[in-house]
Length: 124
Image (cartoon, rainbow, N blue to C red; front, side, top):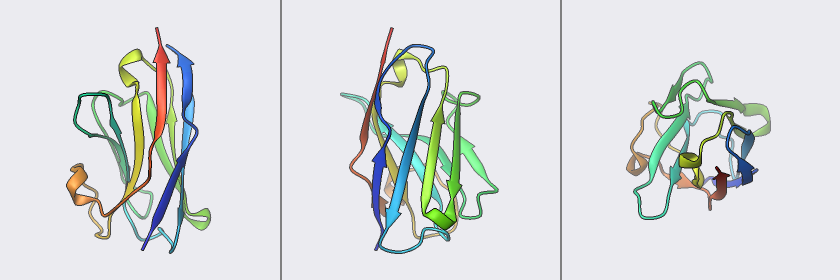
């Protein structure tokens, strides 16, 4: 079993930056692909970024490519999401997720473990 806890959300002006962290406990996540997702009010949860268990492979939604960077520190059981050049449309609750199988995928239903989420609000 894996427990995930996000932190680092907050209120920022458009063009600003935030770094989200996801701390895993329960067992090591060094063999788990990890993902960041977000959900805005009235919208479905959507994929933002993912990283393979090795850290070699990353994947980004088109809407954040070039602005967001996902990284991991397996020894510390941490995953990060560096968000730069933030836009009002990035406003959402951001969730960290892990899956039990090796392949990096984008569908929320394919992830087995979820954090509680952290609010990110970008003002214009």
